Image (cartoon, rainbow, N blue to C red; front, side, top):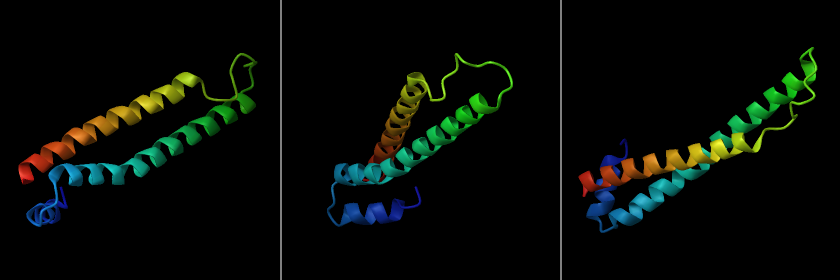
Amino acid sequence: ARSKQNLNLLITLGYSPKWLTKNVLQSWIPIYVAIIIFALAVTEIGQFIFVKTVPVDVSDVSLFLDWKVIAAAAGLFGITFLINSATVSKEMKTIS
């Protein structure tokens, strides 16, 4: 939204809204991936500390994250990407 003027100028200069949408979305992917990796790392550290420090027998609790947690993180990445993609496409349509 902050770059609306710049995007409008690029469209005026002849850049395709589809190409601009693709580039805007690609610029956010590394940020999404970094956030998800950070969240998974913090969760893994928390689980490891919990298993090592809890005074009761937790032999049935793994030191590592379950595959379902990683699948949920991948699902959240997908949902976030789809929502952002729809939002950027909608904004591009209002600009052009």
